[in-house]
Image (cartoon, helix red, strand yellow):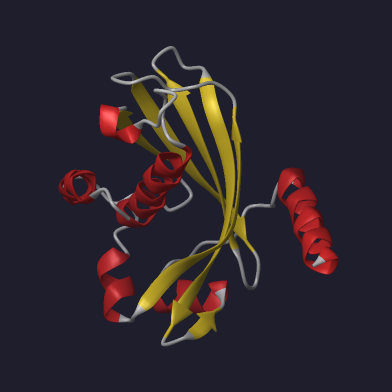
Length: 175
């Protein structure tokens, strides 16, 4: 993550918020700065992914579990990302990133992350699949929830996740 100043601002923002569920969406505002842009003078595709890191951190931060995760040495690792760019984000424009935990299965966590422009139009949408690792080993969702004292059950995963899983399996079998 190369956005240390924005990370610091996020940490300050999260410190002042009340605890909320991980299932509630997180919305982060950003301004597209010139160094966020590529030669086409719009938000660089790698910067979307970096902003998305901050969005996922915000979901954990709003649930007030980051400290406990660090003390237990739980670390999130991204397994797959699928992003679709719909409209560009120009320099100095204000955008918002909405991050929503869609649910989980025994192994993976699934999130949807959407960028919106100042008029509320969607600029991009991404699906993210991740795991948690502790001391080099995968941690199941149930074990993570238990150790973090979270009494949550996964919502039913949407059909888009099941279709995406099928596509991922087809890609793995093609290699």
